[in-house]
Length: 502
Image 1 (cartoon, one colour):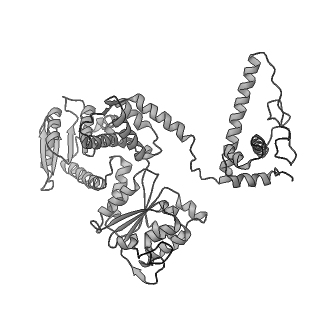
Image 2 (cartoon, rainbow, N blue to C red):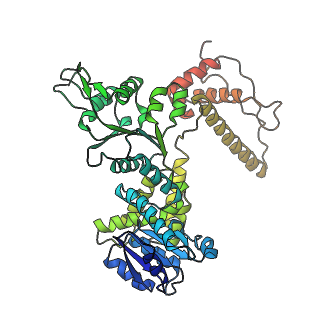
């Protein structure tokens, strides 16, 4: 195992050599940055240890060039203790381990050994990053991997939960055995049960032959159940039985099948809330979550973004040798400040599309800003998880629409006044329960001169009434206009006495 040391003096390599490092470690010394970059082209190194006193290339430029070539490499910067905090403020330095020049060789060897353990487990599963939060995840993987415990991996969609599951499997005694992943949210209830446990011939229409499920196929290995929060109550019962008794029945079968598998599960939902609401079994939740690993979203580890970008570009160039696309530092800074709701998956898609489709050989700051602007506009139109009830969320959406309508009315009034016209004073009238037909005269919204301010329920009622008038009582179209479900609209029509003929 080779380590590259960049230092203008032999003091640093001598310090490491005298600290009794592992016998298979070999240190290569380069006195200048240019010499070291040349060495990186011809040889693979486990880590690069560089002295910030190197003068032929600024440290930030050196780090960038190294990461562009080897995004996953371990980097250790050695600097006087008083300069370490200043050194770590640059864009590319957040992923660099800082070591005080006054530290001992034994301490530096210990730092390298720990970094190698972390990097080995991350690299084996394709996880890229050097952030503190990601290293914490790696240490948890190292701790739980050798055991046979069930692990629940939580994290947002696109954050890499399956990669964490693979890393756990690779660090376990079951490495080399089958690793099967099942997306539980991709199957209908009956189909998922057959996919997991298999079925006997004739168990249902279309079951023309016996089929083994993934629990049988993964015997001796590991099963990864993604989107575990999507499984039905009936399947939850059967899964709990497998976890507790290591046995199950095929669909339509009478023979109990014993199985030896390790189960890893993942979800982007809050299962504790699902348990409280009765949508997920508490006993299964506690059985799955013997150990929990929370994978941080990309916005919580922005220091990993430059490494990920360099990693994706390197992959593209390896598969497309003619590709020469690079990225500007300004663009990297913009990417590092973005929130990335789609996490690593979204970042990868952006880099790949820009690298392959851009007419320019450099991904620019403007391209990044344009993408982020479009993504932000799209996000505003998408439903998000709020932790509120459906009724509360719908009511707040209607209220937001009313606020926007009120703003537009004020702007229209100001425009009319500016042109010398006097706008009609609109007043709110409490409508009597009754018609939803278009013949019923329209009532106006309140303005500042109104005698009283309507309640939220009154405004919601009038909004629904107006929507029904616009579509001549067609409830399906009204629900689409309001952005709510038809059943919810029917319920509110009854609640507010808007049903025709009442």
